[in-house]
Image (cartoon, rainbow, N blue to C red; front, side, top):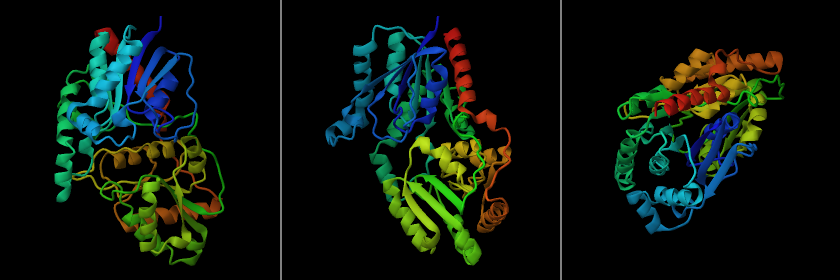
Amino acid sequence: MQQNILIVCDAFPPDFAPRIGNLCKYLSDKYNITVVTINPISNLWTIQLERKNLKLLRYKLLSYNGMDNTLHKIGDYLFSLGDRQLYHNVLKTIGNQNFDIVLCTACYIFPLLCAKKLSAHFGAPLCIDLRDIMEQNAKPIGFQKIRHFLKLQWLNIWRRNRILKSAQVVTTVSPWHVKTLKKFNNNIKLIYNGYDANIFKYQKTTTNYFTITYTGRLYDLSLRNPTIFLKAMQELCKNQEFANSTRIEWFVSKQCIKQATDLTLKYNLSAITNINQMISAEQMPNLLNNSSVVLILTNLATSNGPHGIMTTKFFEALGCERPILCVRSDEDCLANAIEKTNAGIAARNVNEVKSFIISKFNEWQKNGFTHQDVCNKEFFTRQNQAKQFEEIFENCINKY
């Protein structure tokens, strides 16, 4: 008889939620899965996830559905109203069913409290998967400290840590996250983000231009700082042959278009730059395979942050075996992963950026395409990730 898993999550496709979406995709033939989440707020993941053993329950919550309700938002900050709403709605729908384990996957805090209460209600072990934590971001300075305090981040961290102590197992996405969260739960496992090996795979594609592609956010330079890349491109474009043959393609959200435009103008790169809106998940493999270099933005990991940010875009580019240019190197988790997989370079200065781009430009001139001879990429597949979760589930259920 197949075991029953209840998954409580803050987002599910068509929202951009590749970690939980792929987990359901590759585990639903082994388990009966019920997913509890909120109504979608975007349409970035259009890949279909219909599975016979997958049941999806969505709920509309005032505090998590874009409604301008100040009192409700304050209540959510102070009393976790969103979690409590979701919990009571779930009980009305499936409160009399049986589950063998409850998995909660979250970014920061919601819906951890709901999952904890559902675990107690169903008498099932609780597994918590944290994709992001508040401490990973750069520490606030100046006026930002006041804003940080007023947003009650410290309260959410305290709440989260209390809930972590009640979980049978915790999973997270980087060695830094493991080290940070181990203080609150000793049974913590590292499961990296990854790529779907059936979708993100190498295709030999010749292109008319040497194309450097970035997809993602671009609004907080303390987290994602493209400065040394832009300086390097400004210098390289003094060579007219390089400038005529090169294109920079930005794919960013609407909120980030102004930032990308301002940076392009600042470094006089308008002639070779196109700024586009974000594309859907199903368009990503083709975009990557038409890229000569994939740009990953981060920043140096210091005592003040950022820490342990392992963007999904790194793993997807790894799957497509595209050369990765990471700037500014975090000199930490992401740089180590790039080195171990021979995925490209985590550059620390303008000269390293220039050297890497020139080598890949020469390769493109010779062949019409580029290819990165990566290694050990199979470890980072979503299929392997599902196997890791399956092992955790079985151990957790057997010991509970």
